[in-house]
Image (cartoon, rainbow, N blue to C red; front, side, top):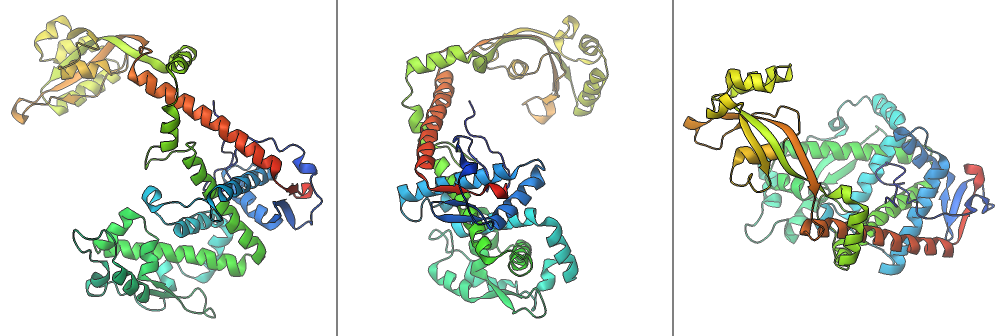
Length: 447
């Protein structure tokens, strides 16, 4: 059951939740033609909507303005929910989970959105600037000498894993790059601290290791980002109010993702989801059994396989044999021609390998997980180099069954699936209530 459906893939900024039927929303108005919608008294300007529509249509040209606006409205409702539950600022993303501070994340999302929405115009602006490398905007050479950087980036072993407060102050005062984007534009500066704080934990390690090539590339990337922001402010023609509203919509989307994660409805590669795990612990054995009966195909497992093997004495020979089998040589014929194993005369038969007989035998363990009717890759024996040999496997038949309903694997997978649906339904109800209580007006003319 997929209750949540991301309909726009632009840095998740306009990803909408298809959980609320905002009935009659087109008819709510009237509004000035410059305003696409007003949510709880706050406007989403038509210009702001245009930016998100342009970005969304780069990924999917068929995306409708209605879908994009609905996504922005739902994100706003979720952000307002976060504020009501967690105070004025709503949810804050911790550096421990994502590796970037909130300001850096906001800048990254803003950069990707603008780069997508205005791709051609930004390319033209870069071309017109005559700068082929972002370091061409520098007004002074970079000083990346170890003598300059070491006092601020060296770690005090066993005491700190980041800059000390004193080093932060020094880095904030140290200008690492000076640049301007036009002859008549004022010179701008980038401090070492501004560059450092924008990196995630792994990239900060590169800076502490004085990887000067990485630092140079990080400066180039930051200048690219700053150029896009400069172009947007001075050349896009977008009104300042629409720019502010765009940043609010980006923040709404960030709040949405953090909120969904905390509610157990999103997870990422960084960690598991405590809310989902906690909900799963409340799932009963009866619920697991019911889910198991309704979704038995999810719990299919291999019970036994009937397999054969072929052994050769070198990787070169193994590659040759595998290639010939793929080109049509029968496995039985290959065994007869090439196998040096003692059972070559009987076709290299391993017989039936079940879940018990595979244990303690690396060849049978590998055969148990091979696809049926397809030659395997070659596997080097786990022995000393002088005694090494290579095995090639073929599975003739595979018998499947179902994991026992009382197994820990079934319990875990079923409980997580049930918990996810329970959380989705509870959250859907909360969002529906929030939308019902919201003051919402939409301008149908902008659609």
